[in-house]
Image 1 (tube, protein in one colour):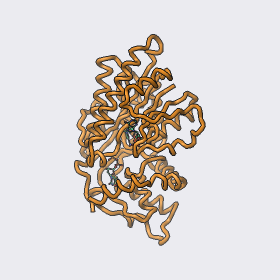
Image 2 (cartoon, protein in one colour):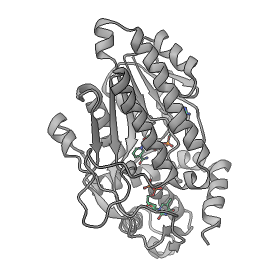
Image 3 (spheres, protein in one colour):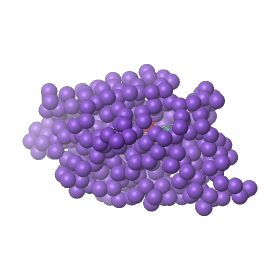
Image 4 (cartoon, protein in one colour):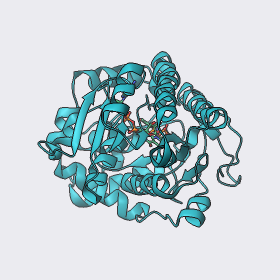
Length: 354
Ligand code: NAD
Ligand code: TYD
């Protein structure tokens, strides 16, 4: 059995669904169900004995230690985190608590359990820490993409907290020999993406007739990866990655934000035209920039391709079309997600940008 933490969030839930679609190895899913955790993402697994959900915190040493022992877990994939840059700017504390202190307690529980194992069980044990390209900081227009050797230069409280967690994971390998793997991935998009992030937010606002907020000049570049490609990369690293190594994961899909929003508008014009026949791009509104906004991220995913043979299956064009269709076909999920807590956030983040 494996333990997935944060498996009720965007990427974690996609990972659990894909894992159980590919194999029958059961998953223990530990998630604190913060605002970003949504068990509805896993509704299709209701009654499936291969999925055991546990509500709890990665920082709870006793709980994690018990899960590791009781279920004789062979691997842990750590998605649990506070993940939204804008929230980290408004309130960094939760990011420090979960991403740094929480990861530390998780590592302590892993160290205790792994230390008690012997033989094959000890040799085969793995801890895969899911991280982000944002730890590498911001690139200039013509800089080469981030390789695994790029220095850490985090610029937001979010990326700084993820960088700290990566360093702890590295240290637990070098100091205690814990068999870790770290992945640093670029921006994901796809089903079950919480609508505080750019792509789902733009789709929801477009359909609701609301403004499509572009921070600053909209020329910031992100390297977009379809979430299921991220999941397949993680499976690949977990199975065949070299212990102690870092693997960068990306889609070779650098796009300025404004282009992403124009693409979304054009697909919606085609699939769900506005009642008045006007294009959705008329809803684009420029708002005050994010403080310390990183200008460009780009991943060099050459190492994972060379060593493990992984490549993304989707292009941006195919993945974004699938994503728009998913949101149009899953309006009940969308309506439920747009809860009170989410609306409070929208008021706080965008009210100040007018
Ligand atoms: P998310 O915010 O959608 O989900 C995070 C999940 O973790 C939620 O279900 C939440 O309830 C849970 N959680 C939060 N604190 C917890 C705690 N203390 N204990 C247990 N569970 C807790 O995030 P996501 O976008 O799915 O990202 C998952 C991971 O991937 C994060 O570590 C993030 O840094 C990393 N990542 C995300 C992206 C991206 O584009 N979204 C890109 C690269 C890496
Ligand atoms: P986001 O989805 O928050 O991911 P990240 O900050 O981790 O890259 O944002 C993606 C890009 O879109 C980022 O450059 C910020 C920008 N953005 C907007 O222009 N408007 C918005 O309303 C949001 C949420 C993001």
